[in-house]
Length: 117
Image (cartoon, rainbow, N blue to C red; front, side, top):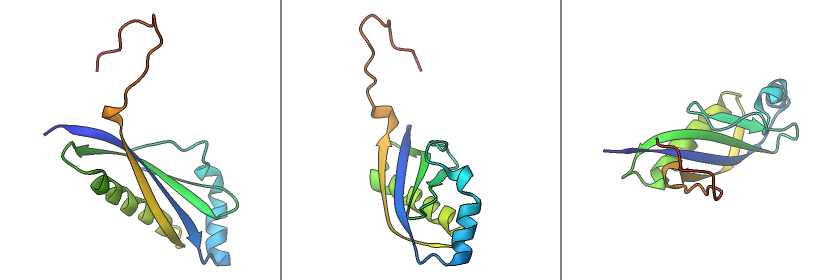
């Protein structure tokens, strides 16, 4: 069966942060900036110094028959694991998936033919 590439964005909130949890997150904040972390197969956790909201971006391969819900469930589990590695709690996880193989790229007129994959 054919696989498609999905980009999944998971969003959530940190909750009940104690001083030790805040310190662990703040010690790593420079490696988890929103502007420096993109979509990857390993996934990337992003947050800022306010330690309120976070996002997790991951790129997954799944069979075409897979539902967006199944892909989102995989991403939610990966995001939960990434946050739990810091030993902190979270809430309000939600995910949205985009099937990149179905995204139409608009090419400017006169740009020539689209590249072949």
